[in-house]
Amino acid sequence: MPDGHRPEIDVILDRHDEAFRAFREASNAFDAAVGALRDTLNAIQAANHAQGDAIGALREANQAALRLLRGTNG
Image 1 (spheres, rainbow, N blue to C red):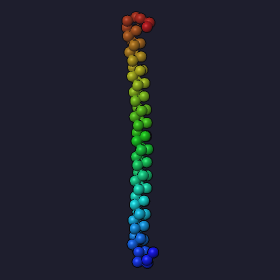
Image 2 (image 1 turned 180 degrees about the horizontal axis):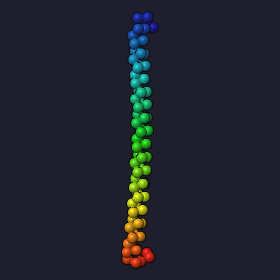
Image 3 (image 1 turned 90 degrees about the horizontal axis):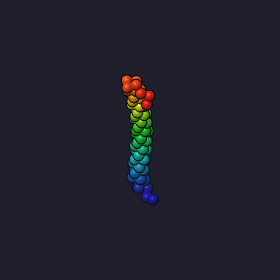
Image 4 (image 1 turned 60 degrees about the vertical axis):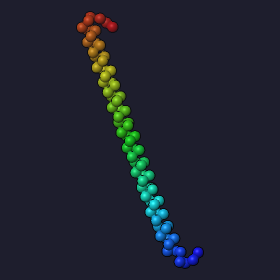
């Protein structure tokens, strides 16, 4: 390799290194975003289950009150 190419190759390799570093940072940011999305979806799922439990409890209480009001056992 001619010595005259060394500085140009050095610059090219530095740019490649910078590009690889940028790709790594982007990949890490994407991983973090996916992790945060999983946490968000898990929280939404937990809230949905809690809401379902609350709806079930309210319906059971309502049905019990209707039975008392109507004087029935079922």
